[in-house]
Amino acid sequence: MNVILMGPQGSGKGTQAGRIGPRLGLTQVATGELFRAAIAARTGLGRRIKDLYDRGDLVPDDLTIGLVEEKLDEIDRERDLGEGVGGALFDGFPRNREQAKALDAALARREQAITAVVRIDVPLAMLVARLAGRRVCKRCGAVYHVEFNPPRADGVCDRCGGEVVQREDDTAEAVTKRLEIYFKQTEPLLAYYEERGLVAAVDGDRPIEAVTEAIVAAITRHVPSANAAVSPTAGEQG
Image 1 (cartoon, rainbow, N blue to C red):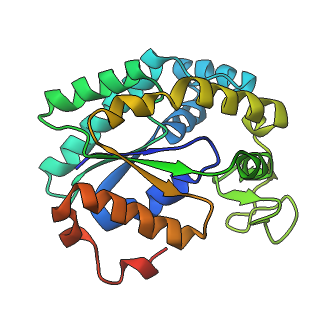
Image 2 (cartoon, rainbow, N blue to C red; image 1 turned 60 degrees about the vertical axis):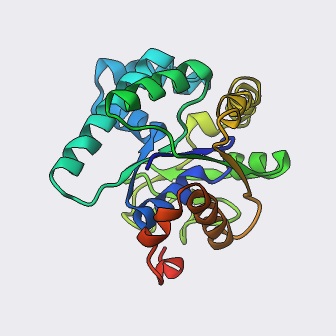
Image 3 (cartoon, rainbow, N blue to C red; image 1 turned 180 degrees about the vertical axis):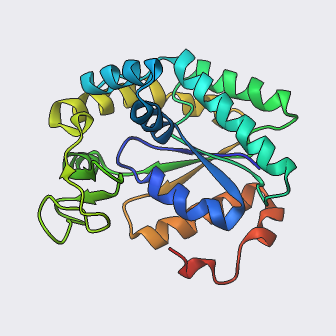
């Protein structure tokens, strides 16, 4: 089973992927996390990605696809070792038809395919509020929000005591540019999957738990057998 979560930045894809993955035995494939890991490693690729992030630009397809292919190889190795991995949960990928076709090809080489695509809908005003107020810890990467989830001490991470800052790609200018790019380039990608009957829409402007349950229900409608993978008490897990 391989599932794609779609929605603009700030729609909660990362949060929901972290909740849904363990319930359905799916490994999260978040391009944002892959990019940040490359940046933290200070490799040549990481430096190229950081420059793009600082300008509010998207990472080119060839770099993105290369990182995703590496992650798929890792998932295959974990499955072969019997570690309970049932597939991938894609967060932030694909962003366009070219990436979607490349992902289809990568999965086909592994005798797999996309099972379901869940679109998380959130009003534009709420997206801007979520993104502009986001803050992250420079040391451990913990995520906060100036309004919805501020650290106990201003500018200090609750988890590790590191400095909490606004990422350069979360400034008002960068946020606006990212949302414009999404609606122009990524949203039309839905038609690619709608033609195959894979898309389900979920209202993302609700409490986190309610959105989680709606997404799991949407996925299991596409894969009835997935119901067996859902723990009876999973709705209370964070």
